[in-house]
Length: 153
Image (spheres, helix red, strand yellow):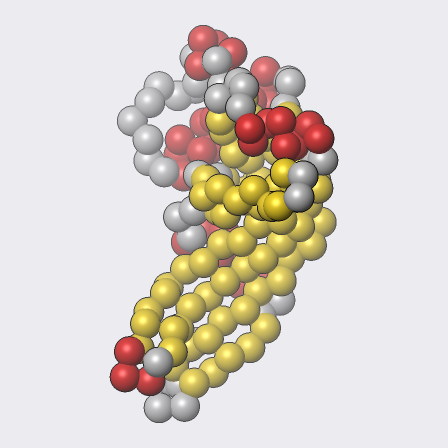
């Protein structure tokens, strides 16, 4: 079985990755070393939304330097006999900002809840909006890659 490995920068591939990957790994600046976390997310147009507590290291990093990078991975399969891994991945860069507008925060919370089929009230109650921070990442660059066994698309 011959493998296929290629960059994939088709917008349809990006759409597929944003809809099928469960987690987004967000890399932020933390002084000397990067700080990376897996997060729930939703993409809306050219922006990614994440939610978090109102205080914490993630928000401190974003306030210090809003330039971030992220990656998604899907369809991971390890072929042990060939010592290889098949996958689809997407990497990107963007600028993060802490959303202050309550309407935008509510829309983002609802979209995240819908994406993960969360059993929480929708639309998001005002109390939930007030006790949750929302970060919007404005996407500036995307690149995709996939490594699949031959005969698959």
